[in-house]
Length: 150
Image (cartoon, rainbow, N blue to C red):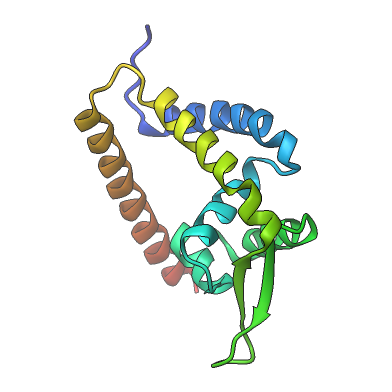
């Protein structure tokens, strides 16, 4: 086994393999690895706006818009104009979305079990916490660098 010193190498390799796996698992539902994250987050936070969804997932607004559009086309989510601010739409699961929700959650549960195979529950939790810290660190840094460029 090769040991690499760059977290980026591991993150990139895990991401690529995860995309392959999830694309296969979600194919029967008509969406790919690019949409499950949005679908899952909306299911936990119904009424969220696209802007807030982008912020929480650390994903750009254009990518969020594309994913929301695809999920809407598939009939899994719907957009309703905000009652408090007409400029925004709130996102909700449709009945069809609720129908597939147990399958989506089962696929995600199995994925976590695969990723954490060979780890104790505590090690799995620690790994997630450390990745969260790394994401926060790099997000802060890219925000700082971008603000210097403007």
